[in-house]
Picture 1 (spheres, rainbow, N blue to C red):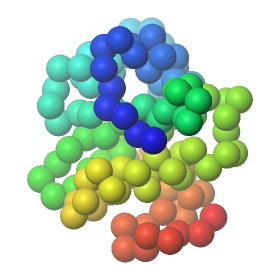
Picture 2 (picture 1 turned 90 degrees about the vertical axis):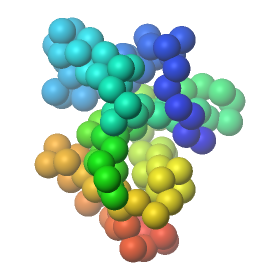
Picture 3 (picture 1 turned 60 degrees about the horizontal axis):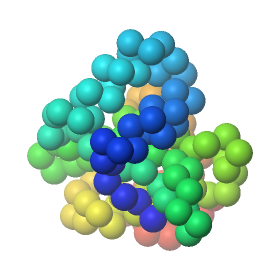
Length: 124
């Protein structure tokens, strides 16, 4: 399930974000975290497995009638389990009525998941 980021999850969130190619540099990573912590347009969510382990993260920017997905990361040891796809569908439930769009950087992941705003039952 998706949970909202809280400061006490900072190290876990930074670790997950660091798996993203554009977040490898520590200064860039710290800047991204600051944005999620201070700017209300930017929201970060963590994926918590049933055993309470945090295995993924999704970061969005809120616009008027849409949500832009800027970051998607899954712990490498939990990849190919459908966590990323589940995060997208959970996000859709949280922001009901808003369209969820990728950025240029997250388009390949949306395509891999076959995720569409108008189709709740997207197939892989």
